[in-house]
Amino acid sequence: GAVVSQHPSRVICKSGTSVKIECRSLDFQATTMFWYRQFPKQSLMLMATSNEGSKATYEQGVEKDKFLINHASLTLSTLTVTSAHPEDSSFYICSAPGPTDTQYFGPGTRLTVL
Amino acid sequence: AQSVTQLGSHVSVSEGALVLLRCNYSSSVPPYLFWYVQYPNQGLQLLLKYTSAATLVKGINGFEAEFKKSETSFHLTKPSAHMSDAAEYFCARSNTGKLIFGQGTTLQVKP
Image 1 (cartoon, rainbow over the protein chains, first blue to last red):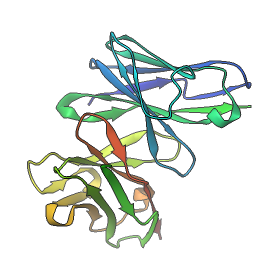
Image 2: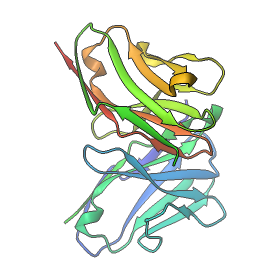
Image 3: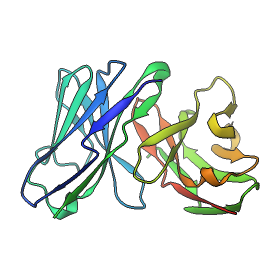
Image 4: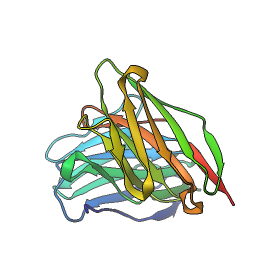
């Protein structure tokens, strides 16, 4: 089946630094990818839609300048958390629509900001 | 706003017992509906999906769900729970490609 990978799986950084998370579709192309964040014991909240060749579409309340999204190719989208702060600590998950209109999810990235 | 509601944030069953996880949607048009499972510190795995082809949908690991338009429900069931079924379960809807998730239900399976 379709596989989506994320890198890194876990990252710890200091407050004020930037962190880049990669999302790759390994065996299919994705012109669109989605980024979610999940706080402990909570559901997934859609942050933004990443579009290959154009700007990302952000959900209401998500800061565009804080969460930079770049859809560099048909198999890669990156999320950069700029000037990270402890409140940005969360589990970030990406997904991509694959065969049969099914969303395939990456394994997630655990971000901890000290 | 169109949404998905999961009734019961925590469900506990004994091993071998019936599993029933509830999901209701709000929409004027029947959406695509999904059930996903998430194990700790992992991404989501698709259990099954409804895309209007059949109201009773069979998924992986013995799970199935029935779409009931009159009740705007899409409850997930499994006849006999296994210890490995303990996880977080999410109901989700999609009608433009984006997924909107319910709050999630933690399934505990007791030996």
